[in-house]
Length: 298
Image: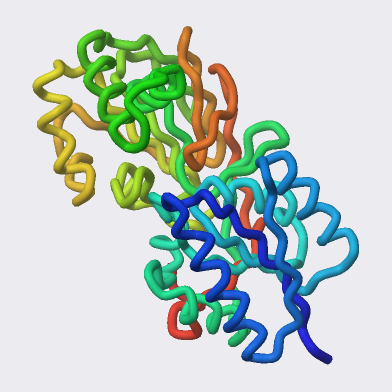
């Protein structure tokens, strides 16, 4: 029997790169004799409605063509089901693709991985009824994102850079209460990140030891630092060496509650809720297509 797949593309992802990647992926899947239903949503809400309809009508797999924002939308539908998710990375960050070692610049190769039909199960984080795959962020980084959303100029990536400079100018210590499985912490911090995966923001290894199959959430706390010190920390985030610095603490827990006045949580780069929030690790919550050589590796 011919396998059927639903390909959901966010054509705006990656500055429009996803539209081309989606066409390449669909062509490759059909060339490899899969039955493909291709859908695009005009808005996230429209995309969610189309995806729910496709899954309800019956599909053997869903393939997301875009970035981590689209992945976040897809897992809201697929988490806890037996329907696997394929990923054609075509966004800005592509952090789940990094975790799963998927090709990030070859849509045809990524489509071949779907055809080859090797899967593994991974954990997801859950906040109420909302799922996330990579990192829950709060503090300085979420404040920057909030400010960027409010700016009308400049456009594109420069808007985020402008927001970061503005937020640095008003940097302050944030009073957190962090509840873990076996501890309650009260401390001043600059940011607190909770990782199911290890990277966010396009490869920043904020929770470098996090694994998507260990049933745990990794917590990284950057305690209150000066503007100069925060800027100095930035290069170490890509290497994951920030966790060796005296200003940084790390923890693991199956459940994490964050409390801090005036702070918003983001997960997979998407706005979730004002703190307080409680995140749980849900083991083996999602099936994903992976390269056969990495099907058993984190």
